Image (cartoon, rainbow over all chains, first blue to last red; front, side, top):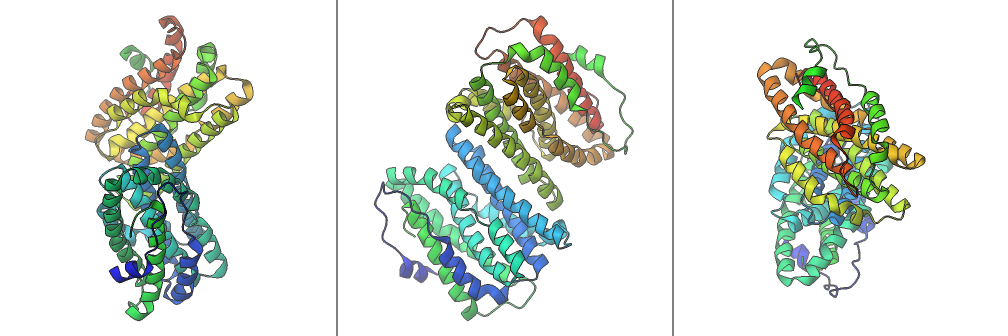
Amino acid sequence: MLSFFRRRRRSRPRPGAAPVLPPRSDAVAIARVELADLTPPQDAYLGRVGYLTIVLFENLSRAVASAPTTSAKTRLSRAAAQLLAAHEAIVREMERAGIDPVEAMDPSRVELDDFQRRTQGADWHEILVTCYLTAGFLTDFFDGLAAGLPASLSERVSAALDIGEGEGLLVEELREAIDQSPRLASRLAMWGRRLVGDTMLVARSSLALGREAPGEDRIEPVFTELIAAHTRRMDALGLTA
Amino acid sequence: MLSFFRRRRRSRPRPGAAPVLPPRSDAVAIARVELADLTPPQDAYLGRVGYLTIVLFENLSRAVASAPTTSAKTRLSRAAAQLLAAHEAIVREMERAGIDPVEAMDPSRVELDDFQRRTQGADWHEILVTCYLTAGFLTDFFDGLAAGLPASLSERVSAALDIGEGEGLLVEELREAIDQSPRLASRLAMWGRRLVGDTMLVARSSLALGREAPGEDRIEPVFTELIAAHTRRMDALGLTA
């Protein structure tokens, strides 16, 4: 896994440079090609994304609750609202398809709750990094995996998973603090590296749902791209992946 | 204060009867008449309601995070979304009126954060009771207090503070557990009584913002009605106020 980081590492942006959000489309476009026939059945896919969006929302709500300023609190509440809207959209898709949302989400509960506990972060900055990196990686991944759904459903899911506005808010909150403290930068870079392992496990086990686990040769190209996108997210924070 | 409870106490609904939500309009209508000239200046009012809606949202997000079932989690996330929408609507009103939202909200931060800490509840059921009772009381109160705002603003604020759907979800979650356990009912009734004191203090100090504290004779009729509405909320849970 580390080799991916090395291969993809970009130059670190100058401190103080305007944060540049990584383009989402690259990773998603490649994932869409590679993942299209690894998509689990509709109910399993939507159930997993449904539960995931609650978990990602809970992370953001912890960020709101622990925000050190009123300004951060109110800005991050917008990002939280975006994830709740994504959750509601996915639940609507399940209802539309005659799928019981609770039954479809339940099988993901234990694993994703555990993922959340392991990745929740010990303080305000770690919580923000978790929100940014895990949500970025997993929405890219599930957006790619949506390629195997019927076309119109796939488009609607893709739209629901577009959390670019919230990502921008998180980068703004983090970037200044990171630029001002090399020590914080180094701690958060380590935290980012730790997160990606747990996050990849969640993605990988989502592929295997309801079918045989695919071979490594099938999975590797997808993860190469997703990790490249992760590295670009780290770059946008001014962190070395 | 206790005398209000006694005077207003209603018969306890039969266990198993469909939960009946208290009609919001009574308390708000009376509060509107009594409060119209105790409304603080627009920026103070909107700032306070803006920060309050974040605090009430944070309570609900704790309920989502600690929900014991997937079903409760996804249902309560709707109630949380409703409070975030209220917050966003109030922030929009500030921006529309040329008020800096952060400056307007900041003066409420310490007091409302403290209110939240004192009322947050020790477990899932207490958290839900807090969400239901404090949000009910304070949205009634601030809806009433909105009577002193310019008419069109007053209407929009009133619409933003209509959280009836979320209240219904909370009653549904709580009612069955309460009906099944007299011991839980007794513990939550005590919790409800404790909450109302802290909640009234927040309401009262909102009146005094930016002007002399009004006399007790002015305030009492308002609180009599708000407490009656609180008692109806307790009744809807099958609890004795």
